[in-house]
Length: 227
Image 1 (tube, rainbow, N blue to C red):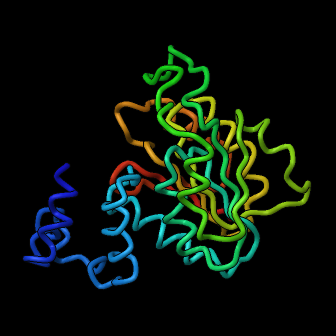
Image 2 (cartoon, rainbow, N blue to C red):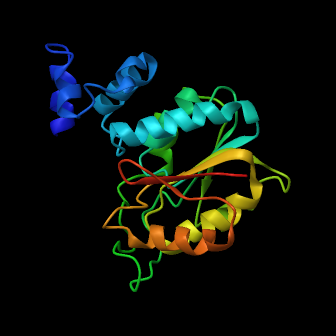
Image 3 (cartoon, one colour):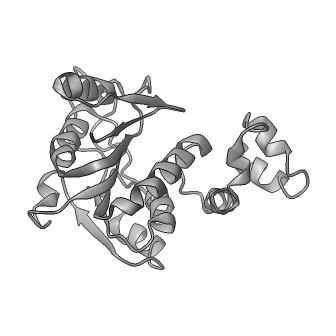
């Protein structure tokens, strides 16, 4: 609600929203293509990422594009992050994975979310929301079973994981890490979120014997770049 009020106030006082968001002295404000798109998405009401988290995706996505290959997002929900990626992905192919029926089975010993959380979405509504973009493939179902129709030799330059729970995060890392191009990036949401402890647990376990460092990003994200 507050962010929507700020969106309207920016027409009266352009600096006020950035002051509230503590971005008065941040160069994000100079990325006009990103900021205009961000505020437009706030009007649409499907963006669940903060402006910092959205900018992290925008920045590392655009830096990864020269590598070529494909792009993926696991955990699409209502399509806010997917639209952000679609807007800036150039002509690369985007693969979107989600049950589009809510959270799958969870491990109550690790995860705080419940099966069925985030069920207020459908594949059809997200497809309509993204209909103006090209080179997007939707994969409905439980990941990684939903990836079986992908080419065996597919490679990715950028991956966004927003799955909130341990098993789905670990499955995403197991699938995408070996298919990630050298220099490619994986960004995960909720790595440092109190409500999603399974995400950090999955990362810490997976990368304990890998060459890559896991870098914390504001607000709750993390990032790795394939060596």
